[in-house]
Length: 163
View (cartoon, rainbow, N blue to C red):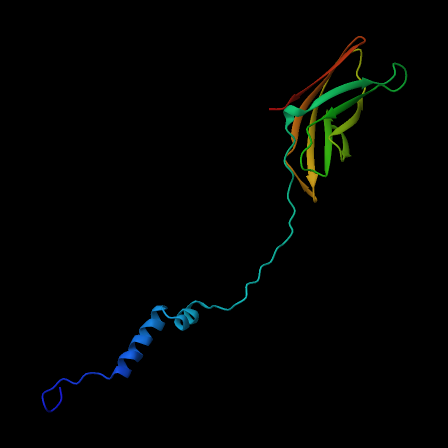
């Protein structure tokens, strides 16, 4: 209040300045909106090419055949394995029997292993492992049991997934 007892009103310029300030602060004016929402900056992103291990071969897809060598000379059986291909660039196939390992590396979903020949009455069981590889990494191995049987001149082979 002034000395005369009257209320002094703020000047219109002061009211306009306060209103402008509120508008800018609340982002309602063009200048205020631009000032509040205009952001400048940079973002950096780094992409690293990585390697992954391939999926494992499904043991249920593995099939096998057997072809025996000649009756005279060195006795052997060629065990040919085929399986469903996975996202691998290669496979390592091993067959183990009585601490003897036969191994082969292949880039296709098939491999032939030359195994020791069987006697006239024989059953040979091999633990077969098929391990897919890609980018130097190995996928989970498929484990198969291959049983080669010979009864006189009748030969057979069965391949079953290992438990």
